[in-house]
Image (cartoon, rainbow, N blue to C red; front, side, top):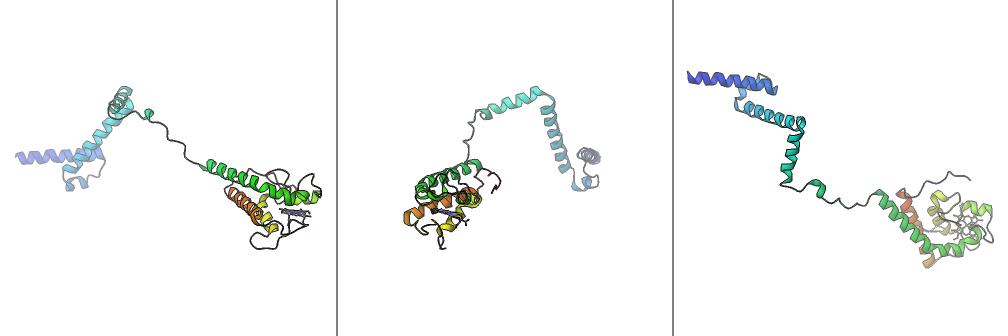
Length: 203
Ligand code: HEC
């Protein structure tokens, strides 16, 4: 008799649990009473916590305070140091290019300024239109790919040099290396989109 009563109670519990959890009534009786009971308990518990936390500000505050007893409050942690980001990478590339340009500038002045700098003895609008080294970044219609243009006219990589126009191949050795280094730094900055937007090609 008691066994039947207990079984009846179990079935009622299972039915109730199935109703609470929303599980299908088909599975509950075959899987036994224990798993649905646990599920129902867990669900009930979570529900209580959610209601407690959401509905009563006091309870929520109390929970936080209890946590404070064990771990330092998050606000006390120092902010993490800023990590190198894309902007920092670009700034570094631009700085490297500037340094390479300053090192190579005397070579440009010696071999190119007469024709490609405003006020140069042989400078003409046409020459300046090709390459204008008066300021920096360089001007002229090759500005968007100035490093490869200058590599080409100097024969970097094996081609026949065409500049300086009056003395092709005159840039050699350490001076040549300074311009090659500048061109590489310019390319690295360009590849990283570190150069400011250029005005449209106005040639
Ligand atoms: C004596 C004058 C003179 C000097 C010095 C000179 N150039 Fe030129 N450059 C010219 C002329 C003229 C042109 C126009 C194209 C041509 O006639 O070959 C030109 C064109 C260029 C071009 C454009 C090439 C093209 O295919 O459009 C570049 C880049 C250039 N020069 C770079 C330099 C560099 C770098 C130096 C120094 C190492 C230099 N030039 C020295 C006269 C000169």
